[in-house]
Length: 243
Image (tube, rainbow, N blue to C red; front, side, top):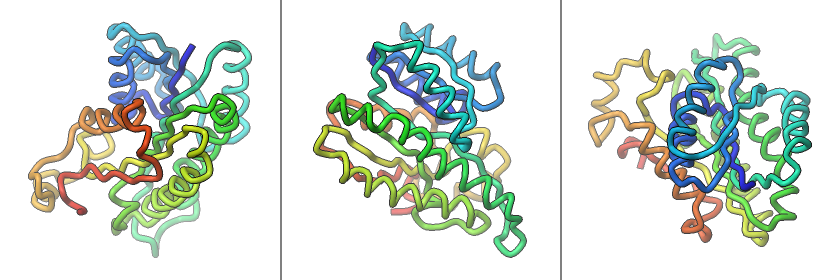
């Protein structure tokens, strides 16, 4: 059973990626979520409506023991499954000016984005190396590329994953495993719902926010066989706001 896991897969970009992978029908899809089971089940239903199979897995990516426990149990129950695709999408924001940023707001963002990448990817990487195939896609952000005021914590976490992507890509390339990052700009999701879209659009050369499906199409390409010679890359998808 060829399998793909999408962290933070119940909503927004994560959900769109699950549906994009479901369209291909190549993979059994593991939809990770942290708290909103209803949304996760909704995503699973839509995945199944597209003719694919999947299941939901609840764990907090920032907690190493929890990640290991849940994934180990899943592997035990699915001994023939091979996880070929890992999409590190889970992330949180705790925006605020750095001078007033609490350690908790700093740490929560770093733990979720950066340690979440470690906890999930590290669990699967040896199995991928043995299998001699893998596609790892890390969702970063325009914030990690150019830095965004009011998001020093988020910018730091995403920039760190950019560095990790480039290093890991070189370590595993010989085993036909690619590691890439996708850096969205302003995309229409719950996360951007409270932003002043009318003002922000003025900054975007394409004159609009992106759609989750557009990001998912890019991720779908990077997980395909067509992208076998692309690794260690960070691909911006932001309507020209940072180019």
